Image (cartoon, rainbow, N blue to C red; front, top):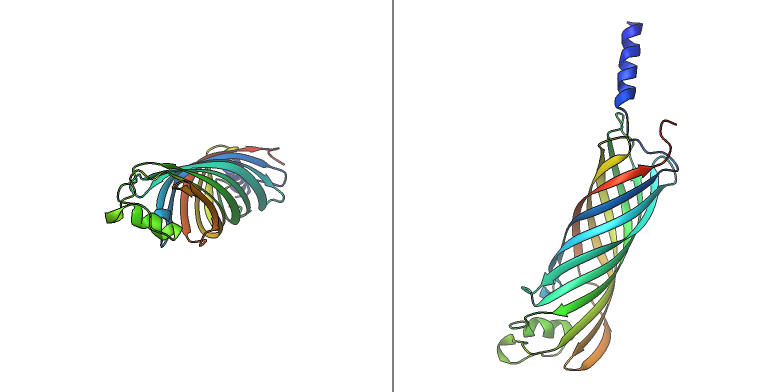
Length: 223
């Protein structure tokens, strides 16, 4: 019986890889889609997303991290092409598992968005632009074709995070992450008909995000 218990202990130890510990660094990348829903149609977007991040474990369970990200999306049926440059800052709490192959976690993040909007086909978008800017845009029928629109805006977003890392090896992991965010502030700079202005936006919008990525643990193992 004692020998059997020893064998089981050895087997469990041999598969229990992937647990993180204080001082570990996780270098990761994530990609996926973001869906934003808002009252203004122009703010309803579906976005492709790519991020890299640096994550440091200040304890066996708690990590802090940051990293840049890029978004690309279109809105109003291609009327605008939207490019986001983002900086993410986050903190996670990990639940160490018995077998070491999975690492569930929850956390919070704070993100800064710097967005540039390129003009596409604006036909049929005058009403939506008017709702956003507060004055009529384009001719009759809600069309805004021929209008030169240059829009930039900055946003701050706070999010709740939950996810799970699956360890393929002792160091390599697959990261599945879901987040739900709220836009806290928004400043819009625009130029329409050669008239430029900067206004505080309505801070309108909820962001749902699901990403899949890969991570690699840097740190001592077996201690």
